[in-house]
Length: 240
Image 1: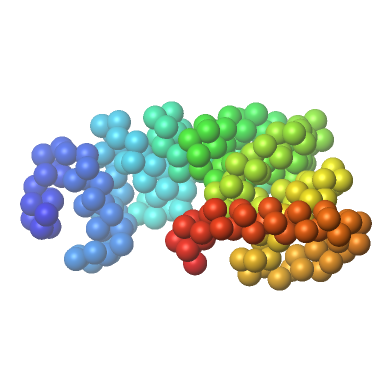
Image 2 (image 1 turned 90 degrees about the vertical axis):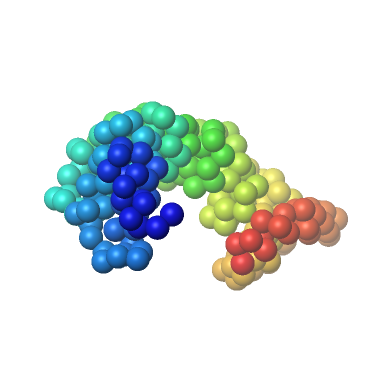
């Protein structure tokens, strides 16, 4: 579709064309970069109820591109997209409640926890690894600074979901969770997976961990790590 045809379809009210035209203005594809025009077309699609348009408009408000930065409007449009199942909007909304919306205020962060968890759950349940990891960190008590929200079982559950999708931080934290629980074979396995993919920081941990393991346990842990790496070669290759 050429620019002339794209503009015609956008002016006729076609949401997909409006979003594509907005993206062209945003990135400067085949035209001069223009955030104001990008915002204009994202808004056209958003106001018709298009989730992608709503997300993009929220992103413009969040970053202050093409208009004044406005936290309330960013949350407003992220929420509209999130309610339609837009994964990135759900993640952004969850992060907003525990980040920009509650910056340097741990009491307020703890208050925001249920709302953030709600949106991370929505995205995590759709298979988004970043949301799964964030949810795991929330349940570990690393986000929101609230002991009342800690749940080790849920932390392990969601970190495992993300780790199985080769989310490196989730794998590393999962190793830590298992180590804390005394499940050294599982801990060694995940640390080994992280090291095998280039994170040398955990080599020392492996050495220290092996001091508490029998020879047979070490052999089993390495076997499990090798099996996991072979089974997930396609994902690893795509990311490398």
